[in-house]
Amino acid sequence: MQYSVKLSDSLPTVCRLGLATRGNTHLLPDDVGFALEKGIQFWNWCGYEDGMSQAVRDLGSARSEVILGTQIQSTDRDSLLTEVEAYLKMLRTDRLDIATIYYLETRAEWENLNKSRGVIETLKDLQAQGTIGLVGVTSHQRKLAASIAEARETGLLMIRHNAAHRGAEDDIFPITDRRGVPVIAYTCLRWGALIQPQADNESTFTIPTAPDCYRFVLSNPSVSVALMAPDTRQELEENLTLLDQWKSMTSSEIERIREWGDHVHRNAGQFP
Image (cartoon, rainbow, N blue to C red):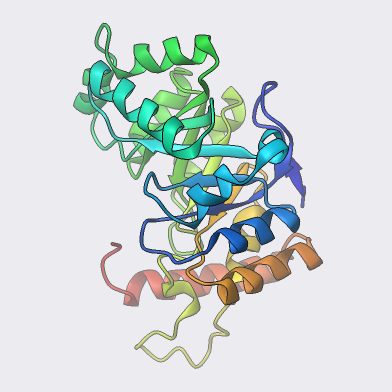
């Protein structure tokens, strides 16, 4: 299992296990700094003041070692420029290494973003200025994301992938592999359901740990980075044990966690 990845010529090589905040997690700046000490250099920030935003402000010369990504929620040029300016000011940085369109769900939304002097054109202008590195898309809609990757309309995709939701393996990865589009995987634990007992007779299954779930995602070479979003330092430290045994799952381990994922998919209710 490859340990590190280079997403583009302009970005540093980083560990394939990344750290994210969601706005409802409680990592402190010291926790985020601890993750960096352990080699976690891909940070995906939620856009709100939290432990990660403070950690970014505290990076100093180490800022060049970190890939900093955030979600873009604006739908027009003026609001986007205001949003990016606010992020840069809050983080006390002059660059967002990755900016992803947050939760693109329809072709109509994508066409609106692609209007003349719209969000995509503005992001590309900011790219040319060096304010933004890669421009990406975050989506649950695999067919839409795959079509964008096929046309190389974005430099990166952020998509859901875990043992219970594996549709990207058929719908997205063959295209992103062929077109050379990096993939960032999120919800690797299916919002925690993959590491929790399920109601319908799970006695024949061994419930995986969080590191098991991240290892499953990272065992697929089509995934560039798998994002973890621990709520506490304890959860973070458990996740980081993956770094001590960085190896791919065996075929039998993959089969077992896929079977558990299917069980979770059937019994855990509707995906949030």
